[in-house]
Image (cartoon, rainbow, N blue to C red; front, side, top):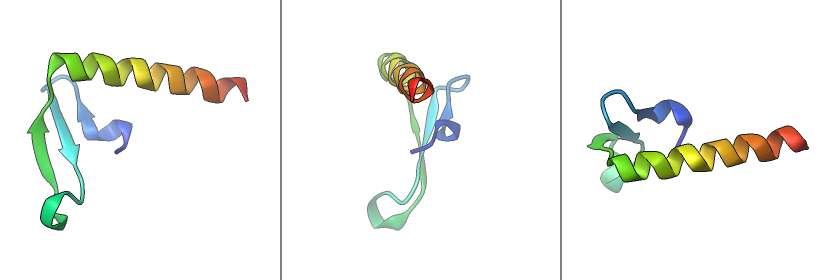
Length: 50
């Protein structure tokens, strides 16, 4: 998954090469969006320290 696969404005996420090797767009819950934002922030902080 890439950051560009997340559409927070429309609360959607792009799943690439899912079951049956098909791409899908699925709904994104507000809770998961918060978790992903925290994860991305922590990863960005970690990589900037190196």
